[in-house]
Length: 514
Image (cartoon, rainbow, N blue to C red):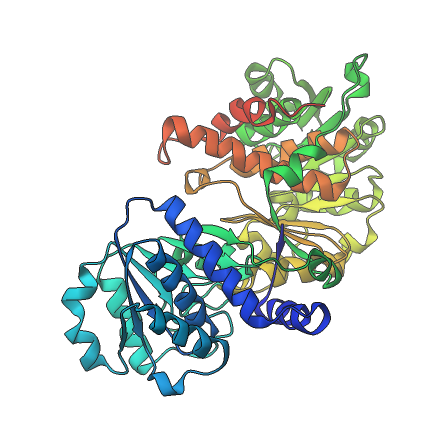
């Protein structure tokens, strides 16, 4: 599903009128009508609704909703936050229609009038926020800030129309203060700020309102940001022939593990198999091999020459190159260690490995200060940093990464010509062509050690089955989050552990195999 910036949405609206002769008031009518239908369906039993309408087109959408609900017998009161003679254009047309129908409309141009209506407002079952739209910029101050804070303090369910008032439609950050909505009915296409945190928290549950935009317009706009949904990613599952055998389903080599970190290595290697790979080979320091071998049954373990610190190192290089010679994918990094030998090994391997590679965790640490090595790669690469690791790679703070997750991932992917998976709430996937995907699955219970190792294994398992790096990233990230959501249903957020995800991968896939 395409996701837009506020400028892209404005351009699409303009072109709908200029190129397809759709009057803007028709789009406003569609927005209000469909929103009223969704509201009645999702909030059945509601008898009294209060609508706060601003002076612009967002307020006009609210007025359309008001008259449709009024016609359906629901008690509606509109609080207009501008004096009527200041309302213009399509919003004014709908104000006049709404008044003619007899819908109660009260002008509240200041805080004093707002306070007078407090008891009436608190009687509403639901409050609709149609105050400010996606074009809002700059800090929300004065009267409108007072209104937003007042509405939040009522603790009534608030439904935002298009976007919670006060939320930046592009960044997802509040513009000083912001409506905290239970649900948001977003118009036409989802806005980026609704999907990224903290915006997603302010938006609540998001419903898409079809305002009948021509599909051709959306396609012609060349929108490169997408929301990953089930119908988009599950068709990407690799097709398995009826006469398939382990050799035809892909061979993964994982280079991982050090003292105290054998769990990361094991979970990565096991996740490859759960994702459908035919063979999973795990290379670890030889002194740790007995520990690893005791933890796995189906994974083939390979003891590697080690350093005095019981890590792999440059003396492991030839053995690893021999291992990957017959492999289809390499996963490198989970629990690998951070000494100089590990760092030098990773830097030597990346330009030499000529099969798809997933680099995570300590593999990323080895690249810090030496990102030029990524430009020397000879095979497709996926990197899977969390925000702290991305900050380390770029030499910036984690806060800087979090304030521009989308842009950070996009720029890195394009500069180094690889696929970036920037992990976190609403994981971001970016490819070298600027295509970007926001994941819709996953939950805060997955904020626990080892979940990233499971993702690395899932990605490697898909790459080994000849799935492209971008499709593997999309499918792997979506199924990883879906596995976490399935665990959440059984165990809740607090008791979820990474190995639970591996156990749920089959259920996440089931019913969608090819």
